[in-house]
Image 1 (spheres, one colour):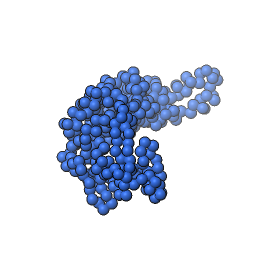
Image 2: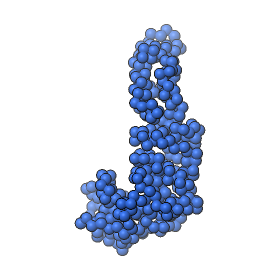
Image 3: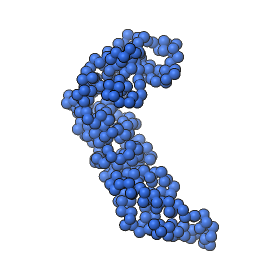
Image 4: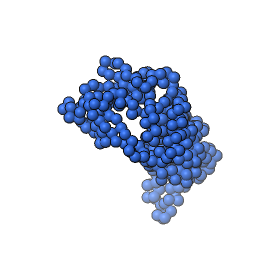
Length: 350
């Protein structure tokens, strides 16, 4: 049995970057041997185990064979006879197909170091075209390593995958998972540039107009998604939400931003009555955290003053004691109007 660190950990160490997580491959072992050493099995499709102390993932070396369309259409083979070279050959990019043993010796069979030095994202083999998720991963890596370029032959391969319908086999959950991760990278616009260049973007998010400001906003997923779609219509956003499992907060912040950003940006010009209507429309009293995300999204065009002014307005209407007003209101039917008048009066004091 021999154990190697593989994938992103090796790549990031060579780049001098912090290692986010470590993955390991075990060559020459059986599941029974792993269990005997205290590893806990977690893999359903192929043998993956958690280390008894570090809880990092250790996978038995394996090969894979394409049997059906899509990213689930594979048969995996894990056995002590599978070599490190065979395991690395099934990986997506050369920069992710390197391994390091416990003595520190690097195994680089597919030119990963050279591609790191040249800042090139290149597929390992033609097997790349068998898994459409790899198009999404490639685009996500382009967003993370924004100074890297996609090798011409890899882009050609990706275009072929789109043309032959492999992308159509992607399941919505996996598409959103990769989108969400890419949105949180250093330069998310690069992800969409790559997807557009290979023809996949129009299939996955038809009609999307990517706002370059997405690279400048805080790395908060609902804010970045709302910034991404800020030039779309509410109906387009709702349509995408039926195609992809977009989280509730992402969808809500996006819709509120499209609906209210114009008013939020000209807040100083609005009457107290109109400002209150905006706060009510954003459900700011009940969901101040979500309102804060809407402000962060809209503030990209005006600066930090926008959140501060609207949060001050929200604090003023929250200071109104609705319970006391209701208690002293002779006509219960007039309570909402009396509370609203009091809140408008509070806003007039700004």
